[in-house]
Length: 108
Length: 114
Image 1 (cartoon, one colour):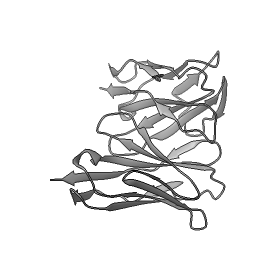
Image 2 (cartoon, chains in turn green, cyan; image 1 turned 90 degrees about the horizontal axis):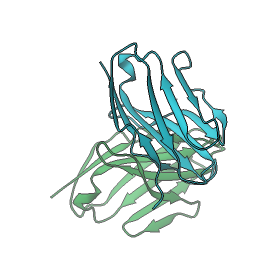
Image 3 (cartoon, one colour; image 1 turned 60 degrees about the horizontal axis):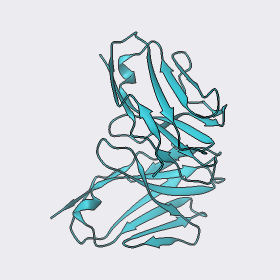
Image 4 (cartoon, chains in turn yellow, green; image 1 turned 135 degrees about the vertical axis):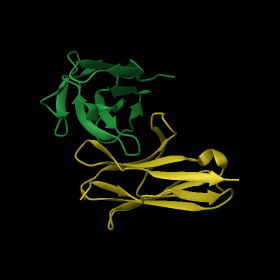
């Protein structure tokens, strides 16, 4: 079993749609969680950290469920510019493990 | 804005040759990571340094890959000999501390082995 697993995607949604990604992790001792965004052939860039209480940044909402060992990312009112691959990152034993990524395409 | 510097950006090498990548992390970042990313997959951790010490190299193919961070600042990742399957993006990232802080990535080195 992989340490970090994500919805395989791809997700193809129209502009304005709401889309949600889930990610599960296997190490119950994991300490910190992040969502990264990666554009085609570019490096990953931090989108947002994920806190136990949940956090929101504009159209983006991240949530953590420690009991079920998953994190989620919700994107509201999708824009064309949201098209990218979204990577779930989990810190387990003081290292940072990435999921395989979920590809999102927002269409006009 | 501080950045993680990597070089070269692109490298084409013949199989069985040696190749090396260089990374200079953000100043003050104690933790440095090397990842390999194959197209369509997520980054796979190869090695993690805390200052000059290796804290995790369990996924590093040690028969052909080596990494060092001698003075706890910049780092070099080497492959010798390169194989066709090593073609990938090699990403370096750094963070203030292991465990809690987010990592910042360099632009990567795209390696093609022919």
